Length: 192
Image (cartoon, rainbow, N blue to C red; front, side):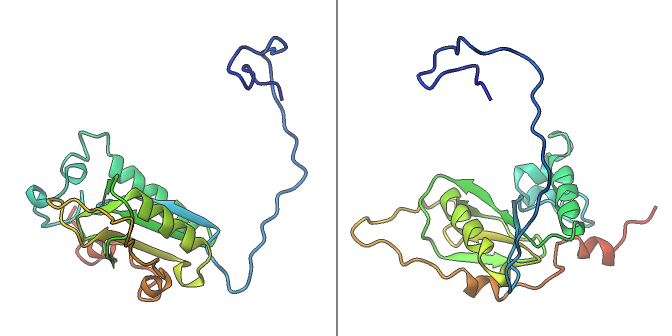
């Protein structure tokens, strides 16, 4: 494949626009035993809340309150999650609360049912995703996660005394299959 640009950023003099094909003879997946997730999806806390009956929107994060104004972003994120769950591939769906640039290391709360709000470090979410790929306990799970640190308090790490590495399996083992937050809607359907 010829790139339009060279490694130094200059234009490639041999570049020619045109069709590109990559024939594939087969694609195969390897699943080890016990089965671990082959697909980790990072969604968003709040995806089931915009249509939840009886929910006080004034106490919800902006994305939930403004779902319609944001072109139904949470509605479409939930549809994407549903397609992953229905696909049959081993998955994990991580729904972080508000993402921050703070370092990883704060104590965490894992929950299911799409009810929590808070914040969590992007770095921590990345570590959770990597751990999920290796954990049979994360397979088939959908969960929300946040740190215990309130928004009003910044989280910092002392480089001389960093927090210990987490064993995320401790959290994954507490999670149940089939909990998505949609259960509330299914138990209390909206009259038509």
